[in-house]
Image (cartoon, rainbow, N blue to C red):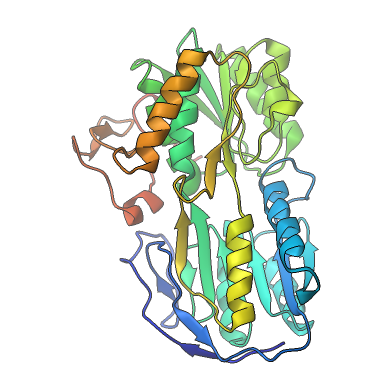
Length: 378
């Protein structure tokens, strides 16, 4: 079901603060909802061919699992009107280009690629194949037929930081982090600010693993933090390994991506979660109807793309009520987690009192806030 494109409205937003840039055909903008590419009407007949490119296995219990939940919801929504394929554990970087090209050669109409490290390859393949619609999770570069999608996990990170701040008797909190990219730095900072809203003296010690899915390495990283005296551990990876380490040490744990409480219920506090299904359903319907967005979509807690998982039994009602009250102000827009004053680790002012950075600044975040122990460079 190949289709030809024609360009509609201009892309919304300001230019992102970003380390990389594309050629003249590639645009970099702040993420905003909206449709900016239009295709000619799709011919009736064959089912729309949709493919998902995953960075991990669907059984990772985290990031890929949640995207795959979205795929399953998509299949349930459209049934025989679509034909869906997924490819697991595709390496980021140059190796992903062959996978994308093979999907195009198979006649795929709509490709969702779900990790930041596919960005350059998505740009190249989309430019070479204007009749295919491409959507890239967590990226910031677009072409005529390539859009991006992600969400404000920092909102739920801040709330999970509140839970950690209430739970930590020592004020020493650990954080098992993946890679030193803005997405991860933004999460660490929001989490730290949430914890410090309860205990201004709280510290967050970071250990970098250079993994999205590496259970052994992640468990060892969590154990090193626990050995250093932290009593609460958070994470930005796709497994529950940090929770297993926390459980064994009698500590508390905050997960990511999915509700991971089943893996270590006695240690569980809460954690940010994703719901990708509405975006996948909406975007697929648009392609069926003859349009392909090259906008940059940034979901929020208000629209449901980002949420907070269930609370563990050790989270008392007063803490739950506090978190829910702050959550309500985030959803109604009266509070933003990155409201100043905010200083970096060296005491340099990054956000003035009463101010909040715009989205482009947030998406280019390259520092860690005061109270974080560890390097922003990994």
